[in-house]
Structures are given as C-alpha cells and as structure tokens.
Image (tube, rainbow, N blue to C red; front, side, top):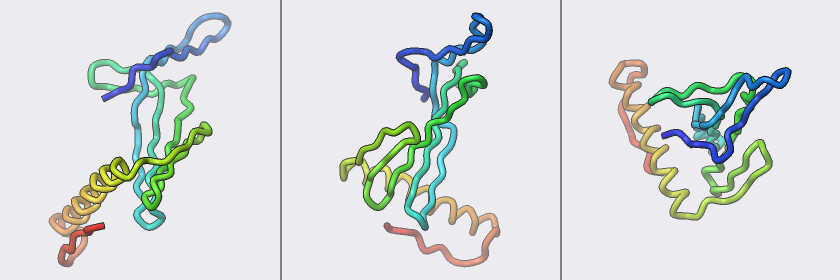
Length: 121
C-alpha cells in the first residue's frame, strides 16, 4: 500500500520543476524490544505499479516513534498522540508475532542453537 498525497510536493530549480512527489510510503521499521520502541520511517516520493521510489530533492523522512509500553507516539515533525488500547494491542500482537518468527528462523537456519520458547507478551 502507498499513500497518495492530498497535495503533491514539488521541488523547483531556476523556476523549473525538477521533482514532484505525489506518494508516500513506509520505507523502514525498527523494533527495539529492549527499549520498547517502534520507529517507522515514512518518505515522500513516486509510485509506479508496486514500486516506490523515495524523492531525492524532497527527501525529508518522517520518523514516527511509538512507545510499546504506553502507546504514546510522536513524529520528528512535531505531531504526537496516544493509541487507544485496542489499537495498541493490535500493533503489539503483530510485532510479537514477527519477533517469534525471527527467533524461529534463527533456530531453523542453525544461526543459534537452542530451543524455542515463544514470547507471550
């Protein structure tokens, strides 16, 4: 899924438009289970079919940081809020599943030797 921007952003040089970013997409997710933080990187750019290309002239990523403990979120653009309990539980369930899958892969691929004990919370 990409996001179609309500108002595309343009960059001009000498009066000529050199870039028009009409889309945005999530380009990265970092999950820190120790610090209990999720950081999502969103960027503007262009989309063609299923390919997203981040903008070059207007490449100012938005960083969204979410506390896994409280649901509080903030961006590097000054926005903030708090997820409701149901939304936070849904997000945490998704990332908990990813953590368990990552550890299962590490065992199956013999990256780490041991026995799996899936995380429940």
